Length: 166
Image (cartoon, rainbow, N blue to C red):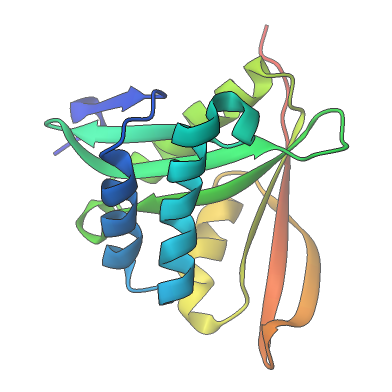
């Protein structure tokens, strides 16, 4: 399997809610509440369209959704976007699909007028691979909010300044 086997799409279909739930569940990282939120964001997009503020990019291999990003403009800002979710099926990790999704998401954000992209994750040791992923993709640590999620579980916010390529 290679990155060239991957096809990307931005259109959201009804069956994506179930696919997103399965992807997030397969990681073993997220609580039942977080899994439900991931699914709800897809449903919100389906219900309200672009007015929801949630945009998606799906990675497909042989017509199976293997990963996705969810992102959107941060209300009351001019050019800042949140990367709400980037997740891959567990068996897809380490194959370049995450970097591909992240890079294409950055291109879409730029096209939409975004100049800064923010991502947050947990400070728990389980999430070190996630933090390393963000660093490899050029994000820098912008803030640490101690005990945010729970005692001993910080929220770490990463930032990436995006530059249009001429």
